[in-house]
Amino acid sequence: MSATRVFVARLAGCTVFDPAGDRVGKVRDVLVVYRKNDPPLVVGLIVEIPGKRRVFVSISRVTSIGSGQIITTGLINVRRFEQRGGEVRVIAEMLGRTVVFNDGSGEAIVEDVSIEESGQSGWAISQLFVRRPKTSLSLFAKGATAFAAWGEVREHATAGQAQSAEQLIATYSDLKPADLANTLLDLPQERMYEVAGELPDGRLADVLEEMPEREQVGILTRLGDARAADVLDHMQPDDAADLIAQLPEEHGEQLLDLMEPEEADDVRFLLTYAPDTAGGLMTTEPIIVSADATVAEGLALIRRHDLAPALGAAICVTLPPYEPPTGRFLGMVHFQRMLRYPPHERLGTLLDQGLDPVTADTSAAEVTRILASYDLVSVPVVDENHRLVGVVTIDDVLDYLLPDDWRSHDGNDDVRRRAAARTELTTGSIPLNHGRRTGNGPS
Image (cartoon, one colour):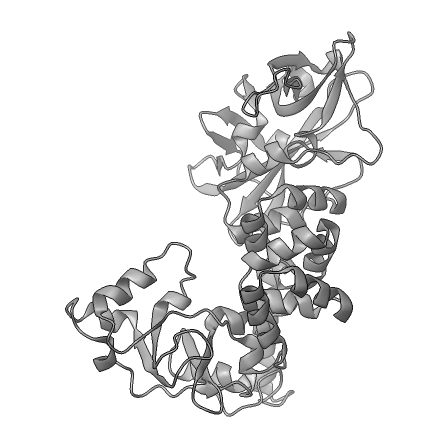
C-alpha cells in the first residue's frame, strides 16, 4: 500500500476502483476504533456502491490511497453497512468535536483528520487539523488553525452542548438532497438531529422531503416551532401537508399559524383532501399561463433551476386568475411539443386535446392507471367548476405506492420479491388484482 498522509475530509466522494480499473463506488466515510494508549486505528472505509447502498470495505482490502482515488483488491462484501459498538465514523462523528490542548492553551474545533500508514499496525489517525476560537470581534474573522497530534489533545464535551456539524455539512455540500437524506439516516440519531439543525432552511426542507415520515417528525419537533415553520415554508406544499398531517392536530395548527400566510393557505387547502385521492397527492404549484403566452415564454418558465423536472414537463393553460384555484382550465402543453414550434407561437393553439383532467376526489389508483396508460409525467386536477387546483406528478404517485421503508430496502431484495410475485402470478396462487391497485389498469 502506498505510504502517505491523507486528510479524511478530502476522501469524501473519492472514487474506489478494483484492480482492473473498474469503478466500485465512492467513499462516504472512514471508520476507526479507539485504543487506550495509541491514536485511533482505521478499520475500514464506508463506500457507497451502485444502488445507493453503503457497504464496509476493510482497510486490509485497500492497496492504494492517493491522487483522488482508492484501489482495492476487488473483494468487497456487498452487505449493507451496520455500525458496531466502539466504531466511530470520522466525518460524521469526529469533525466538529471540541478538543482541549493538554498544555492548557485552550480548546479548538476539529475541522479535519489526517490518517497515515504506520507499518505493521496499519492505518491510524496521525494528526488533527483544528481551529481555535476567534479573537477578533469582526463578523468575518476566523480563529487561528493548527495541527495537533492525537496525544496533544483530549476530547471535551459540555453537558447539553451539541456537537458542531459545520464541517460535516461542508463536506457533503455537493450531495443531492436524496443522497444527503440517506447520509443523515445512517448517522446516530442525536448526531442526525445536530446536523439537521445546522442545515440552512432551504437545504433542510429539500432533505426532509426525501426522508421517511418518522424521521421527518423527529427532526421537525427538535427544531422549535419558529424554525420549523420557516422550514415548512420552503417545502413543496404537498410535502409540507403530508408532514403536518403526521403531527398532533393542535401542534399542526400552531405551525400553520407561524408559516407565511400564502404558504399556509396552500397547505390547509391540501389537508382537506384524503391522502389516497388526487387532491391528497397533488402539488398546487404547477406552471400556469394564459392562452396568449408564447412558446418562448413557456420555455423560459421551465428553465428555472429550482423547478422539479416533473413539473417542467408540461405547462397548464387557464383563464385568469392564474393561481390555484384558477379560472377555467383549458388544457396542457407538453414541453416536447413546444420545441417543435417557433418561439412566437401561442400556447393556446398547442393544447393536448386528448388529455382529460381528473377531479380532486379521483382515487390514487385511477390516477396511477391514467399516468401508466398514457405515458404521462403529470396529470391536471380540477374542481367541480373545472378550475385547475393542482397537478399530480409521477413522483407523487411513486411516493404513494412505495412502502414506507423503501429507502432502506436492498435492491436485490426488491428484485427477489418481484421475481417471487411473478412466480405466484403465473402459478395462480394469488389473484391477479392482488395489491394496492383497484382500478382497471394494466396488471
